[in-house]
Image 1 (spheres, rainbow, N blue to C red):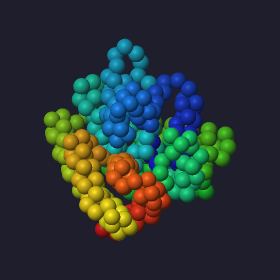
Image 2 (cartoon, one colour; image 1 turned 120 degrees about the vertical axis):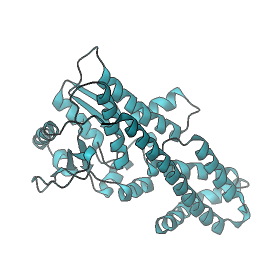
Image 3 (tube, one colour; image 1 turned 90 degrees about the vertical axis):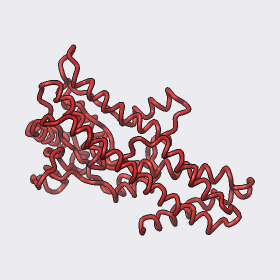
Image 4 (tube, rainbow, N blue to C red; image 1 turned 180 degrees about the vertical axis):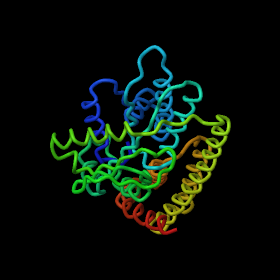
Length: 321
């Protein structure tokens, strides 16, 4: 599944589970994050998110390598998957399994393309514990990397549209929210279109050189980590600047908070392929750090009332760098 928070991915996944009836396994990333946070109360959200991404791939591998039961017809990975690198990681994990076990495995990306404002409205109706900060969804809408090929299914035009593909996105479908949400008849039609798309998906090809694949994966992770740290430092510097311009009495405190957050990231950051998720945690950590050092209740209340302006100013500067 691919799409913004609030796009309707989980609702579509529910429809697919009902349509296929049997032989469906669903790996829901949000549920894994919640599972981790409940099991380890001292775990923060970013750590839980990283664990969930790794655990999802481990469960995928476990399902594919099982020898005691029949393989499911469909494995649903329910997450945003808004970056190509995230989808590529799933493809590579399947390749590693195929290097050890001969079977047919194919992969299809279902891109739920929902207008940003609709996603924000849906997000606003969620329980507070599941609600995503609106600026995170807005920012993700600018960084989303759609699949490079697809059968494009829109509300007004059900024609198919195909373009050149990258290897791990040889099968993909773009789904406009309005079509399948309207009524049960449309849902059934869409389910059949999705089934046809998946049945036409080419088999994933095992890697020619598994060690080369592992080396390339490690190199990608190292480059991603370096880019993530640089990106976080840029965002933090924008937050420091916006804070200092409004609260000069804090002196060097904002910059000290920045250094502490970066230090923690360098020690714990092993795999950060979702900049929007990292930005969300960075922002939360920075706010907590500043509020703790704000210097008294009156200053803290003043800080809280100015936080929306600080964040808006910082993000505007960050996006213009």
